[in-house]
Length: 376
Image (cartoon, rainbow, N blue to C red; front, side):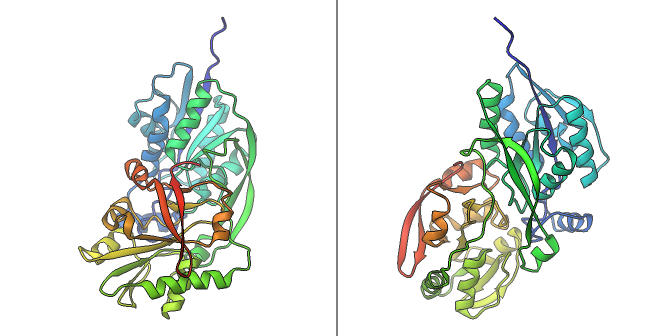
């Protein structure tokens, strides 16, 4: 009987990916943004999210792990209890060129699959560094993840890694990497473009889809959804208005200015504060009654964890599931082709608590129930 073939996995972390999300900076690109996020009290999440994905490999004898030093991979492996070989290291804080150098070095060292934690900027760096020459799998850790190269959450990445390590046959496909202009994004303008492609495992139940906007002509339906929510808003209650065009129409119905890609606070039909981060939202609402209005990312189906990290696990728990209103047209839900809505809050226990059937407001006095899960 032949020995089972060794699977060599390269582990790479962009340690500052997503650091601007919870503090309302809508991205992490650029040293100035990173430094401002740290000044506001943001913490690194990418290393911990990678550790969650790596735990599935602990104790599997036929896996060799190569990684980059410190927060760019080594620390995540150590935190997961996973033995690893450090191929090289970069000075901190890391830069995009460090990510590209590390990816090329891990490939040259023999990695057969590159597991990375980051956002669309990190995926863009991998397109430049390895292209389609090396299979990759993304652990989602950024603010904006429009690309189709990520698992839906760290646990889904872990399951896919376990299948690969167990010798199961997993096909590969070339998937799109998209990136947006962060400066425009902070001004409320989504300017996404096709950047390139990477090769990823073709396992749809574990992978997120490319983000897509609704193209159907359904302005009237969206207006009905917004009108119903505006009419239903209660006095003496905080309303945290999430990002996205559907919630923006609710604000339009109220006659209020809106931060398209941020979270605003409304009280008694008046705009009290705009574009707030997680800590500021918690402080603002205190112990008073509070609700949140959020929408669904078309094509992907994420409720939390993609572009709205201002809704931190602490804030979601403070609100409670019963006080979170999801707005989406039936057409937008139809783009999911039966897949569930997804949650990836950064807290696995909370993600499990949020699973189940949720009421979705789809029109004026019109609701349906739809399944929420942690993987497709």
